[in-house]
Image: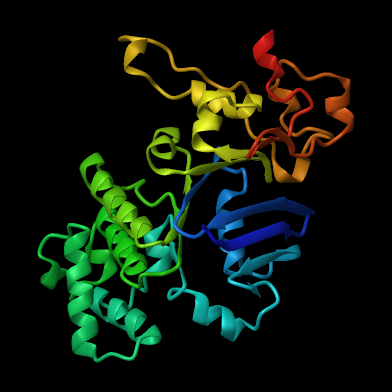
Length: 327
């Protein structure tokens, strides 16, 4: 029987600026079970990364403010726990692979030094043992001349190599949950496949993964369930099979239509979603997708649609969830 590892309830995060305050994460709720991979998808600017950073209280404050909600990890609300308790969870029980490795790696320390410190912060082992573990993991993520790279500074390595080092640092702690924010963006397809194989192995060991991506192909290949985010809110959630076979929100349907297919033929145009994600400082009233939706009607401008059941384990925030397929 699967166990709920993480339960996020009504999370709300805003940012304060000199001009105005705006909401980046608005009433977001979801769960992650032990040993499953959950995809969080949506266009840039939808609030995916801020949601992930909020789970470990990594949103810079100020200007960020966690206005409300609950992040229950193994029975502890991380939003109310002491910062010392949260630091003990970071890295050991929940590891994060950041989108920008240079922002997470110290430019003043050599790679090996950073990896050894990460391990010894959470495990009582010698420097020699920690060094050997680090070296083995650099080999697992296909870092060439790993022993040499242990003595390098981050700026001496390519972006793709820095990202692989971040992945190794996250996986080597064998955490209960990995938050992976676009973990393979800077990697070529061969290395991507190898990294995803490592992630699958972690899943087999009952590690859960929150995979943040815009690549629906990766979602189909890797994820058990999917959360679709738009303009700071979850607009659809369900199993990967259900979302791909019968998307109930037009935004999800449009994301899937934009996936290139070999059957399209040479020179075929990719499907696009008209318009762009609205700015958090100027969200439209009612449904935030209505300006890009050809099926919007009066109610859509007056009311914010809430998530409603479409089928077992499948929800969508739309007044005509799934019905646009009938037109």
